[in-house]
Length: 225
Image (cartoon, rainbow, N blue to C red; front, side, top):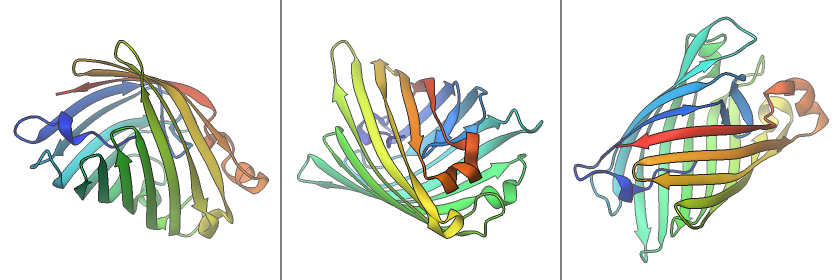
């Protein structure tokens, strides 16, 4: 998901959102297995032109393979630099925690990200985690590399697309490619997205992760206030 635009924050620096979606994925990995999700989030940008920011969000999660219903909780803090007006650079430190889910204690991880953007149109990021785990694999380092773009269209629509690589050699011996493409519609403080997410992984990753690799359509509605 693209970083919220600082310019959309309110006069006091706060930006809130409520969302609903047909499912949830992160870097091509299915987190909510064919079940809808509901999310809430809050971010604080003291200076709309850049500088320090913090945020937190929570997302409901449920898997058809397990009876438990749980949540994904994310807390982050970072700093934004504006370069010559059109360019932005961000550093972000995040903590991902899972509650009331199978293996929740092993699923939590921390992450550091470096992100760059140009005119709210092109985005690129590199992330690093020191303690990511999958299944019985030991917690170890993981990296991801992403590039995404947004093309404004008419009547509030825009086209979006992105591609990335998730480097999980320390856990699974390899990595895989993920990507998405879709449409976004914005009307006032409401945002609607429809996109397709796909992955391409070597045989050893497919054998370990199977149906957790996304090949699906997802729709969501987000209200910013």
